[in-house]
Image 1 (tube, rainbow, N blue to C red):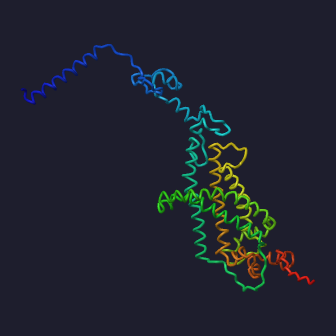
Image 2: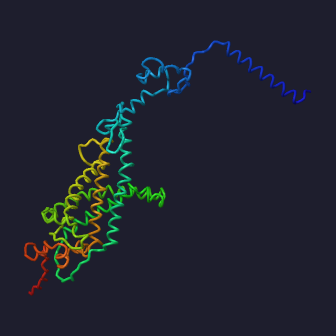
Length: 395
């Protein structure tokens, strides 16, 4: 009986001999043609045989201008010509209708150079504008404006009323004017808060709230943003038509603006029902920026009829919408400040519709003079006639 070590040595010797003879047989046997393996019953695309690839094919004339089909003959699996066309924005075949998917055949947009971006494909150019300009500088603008207002409030405080109330009230805003204003103001606040969270929230809310809660918050605010947008647009038109008559600029408004409304000097500059600052917000914020904000927002919501909604259209609309909304918010933040804690009695006028004669004389002297002269009625809302109870009929 053989020792176990002798048996193991015999087995190893047999295996080595078999491997040696199989190698010799492989060298002497004729080489079989390299073909791509086809699995029975499998009609899918099979991988290319690596032995079919010609490593020196790139040295052939016209290699760089080959089509994808020509390249596949010499270098199977090398799809560089196809991806070169994709990167260049060449339109490929798509079975989707152009009316529903105008860019279905284009994976990568053509090269453009948006303001503030490098010359690159449109998608990357839009990202550069958003991430390098709109987000950092837009956020800085909002912080600077809010910081300046905070410093002004801490140093100057609320603009006080110097005289004593007389008890005589003047109707500054009718019920219809106040309802139009508050509808627009509430819609604006919803749009402003949701827009800030969606644009800047990941920098100051996401680290605190976590991904799940922040995702639900932004999802809810995004839907609120989309629903509040049309309300803001309609109420903006109503506000413009309602207050247009008293916001026609005149020479007194120029004087008011040049003197800064007396905010720094502490001496009120006379004005009509609306001063130069309010008219600047009306024409710059409500009218001009309102048209730009609403129009670009409607494009982003895809509710403008007859417009082809391509990626480039949406990118341009987004950049315009972002810039115009940031400018509108900076203007309206100042307006909100003066209308709430910035001036004593201003909020009460919009809440109840009435201001005291002393407030009207100190802050809108020309308007008060027209009321005292009888040019403007102090009470524009006609009070409802009291209902006289009917007398019982005696039979």
